[in-house]
Length: 82
Image (cartoon, rainbow, N blue to C red; front, side, top):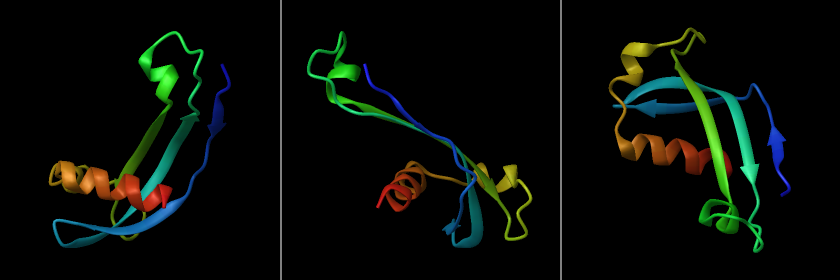
């Protein structure tokens, strides 16, 4: 099983609940599809994506994380992998 690990500290500007902020990418792991995989996860492949929502000065903003919706989470994922 081939796993590609890509650990970065990228910063990405975005908005959550209309509030400008920065997302710090803490960890990215991309597992490509493997037709001989033991499970459906291995067969189709998957990504692990961890980030921290920060204010515009780069400080963690847990209050802003609480305002996130599932649409915000999907949009941040799509923006990063675009």
